[in-house]
Image (cartoon, rainbow over all chains, first blue to last red; front, side):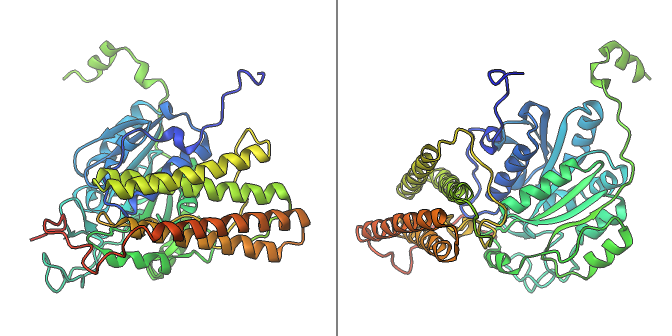
Length: 278
Length: 168
């Protein structure tokens, strides 16, 4: 191949659509969007070979802001839709994105089983410990003592621990990132996309409107002091005892991913009809 | 922070700073337009234009066709010193606030190049760092001048009689 036919390198800008985000100015999701597009550029995966699938919520608007294929699905069902898509079109790179309410409450059961199935997907949860789109209700990851008008004195309910639940359910890659570190987050997302099987990345993404105190997160996050382990028990102990601001890849396992059959989508429609005939 | 060992490495760092600053200003300008704060959006867009112009100048000076990668450990923090913090903006912010953020970013960039000029043992890197430090000092003076055109907002600048944050 000579220089004239050499495809130009893709930059993060190649993965952004012309649609402008309507997130609140200062929202952490802006930098996560930048990190996702940077990760795509790091991997040089063509935009038409990527599908971004989401549920409902502020962060679930993200497919519209990318120039890839996108599916903005129903609340909590992003993983179900993405699993179907990946099984039907294994050649696509499928990235699933959403928030803590969508992923851990409405879609909580899908989360467990997506980890267990270990289909080759990358699932990003932009966690801000609040339902932002519906104006500030406590979410599964909200601290029990978060006092606000809707839950005076706090909910008193223990917060969900997504990383350890992902690990216990069988996710093959578990990481925590901080949206304020765009380049570092892009590296973690790219690592997750490269890793076979189900990769789960929790991204701390501050909600400056309903949780302005989360601006402090940038002073609390710190890189994980140890390398990722492939020992799930060791990873679980670390995750259960860390301060919640430990950033990096925390577990990278070697469990065999769900087997996919290339070319399945090319099968004749009549053949599929026969298969599903009652 | 890793001190650049060659002029190319140093200029790649400077280029990345300008490009990332431009991207951040554009992102925030988009957000301000979406929230109908047009005057502030225009200011951020203008700043993005300046940063993009500086990036083009570096590309031309270095005869680069492809953008080089960011050298690892190029700056001490997670974000480049010239980027304004993404969480420091507000939908009701005034032009004065926007310029105040821009001023702080330019001052950080000036301090960054000053530090590199002092630390570098490579003469070409040291000279380039001094040149860029002087440029950033000019930008600091320029932004300070701009700030005199806008009144300092009152304490109630973020009051919104019809706030989006209404959760009762």
